[in-house]
Each structure stands twice: as C-alpha cells, then as structure tokens.
Image 1 (cartoon, rainbow, N blue to C red):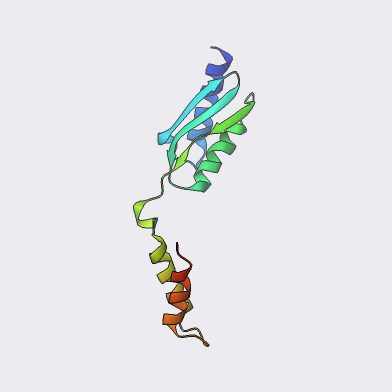
Image 2: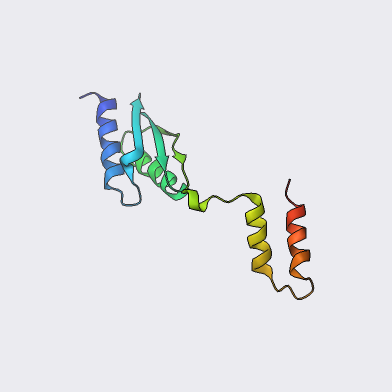
Length: 110
C-alpha cells in the first residue's frame, strides 16, 4: 500500500473513531502527505474537529479543510428576524419603549 493510500485509510479511521464527528458526509483525499477534506457537516465545531482529527494522524504534512458547514434550516434567520428577537430580548428597556429599541435595530439593517 502506498504512503498516500495508507494515510487516507488512517485519516478515515480517525474520523470514524472520533465521536465529535459524523464522518458519513466527509470525503478524504491525500496527495504527497497533504490531506484534503471535503463534504459537509452540521456545525463549525464539527468542521474543526475533523481538521484536528486529520492533523493528528502521523505522517500528515498539512490539511486542506474544504468542508462546508450546512446549518439546519430551522437555525437560519434573516436580519429582520434577528433584529426582532434582539428587540424582544431587551424589552422592557427601562429608559426606552420597545418600539424605539426595535427601530434602532431595524435602522442598522442594510
């Protein structure tokens, strides 16, 4: 088995073993000791954990982390929703009515 093939196997095994990572959607390629990670995960923490796991394998010279973080749709908010949540969270603001706080946040939007 070539060195790159062995490294690929070892990195895949490390990703499979690491409980912080769901490796089913992660691809691994190795060329001259440089590991390329592709695919998608559900959090930035998991993306960094995959990179750390790959880097921990003996013989890996560098890691190119091209993993995309695909956030679940229920976590994605637009700017207006964020502003409304922020205004609601600060209510009641002792010196300002909620409508004033909301307008301050909404003015900050592009």
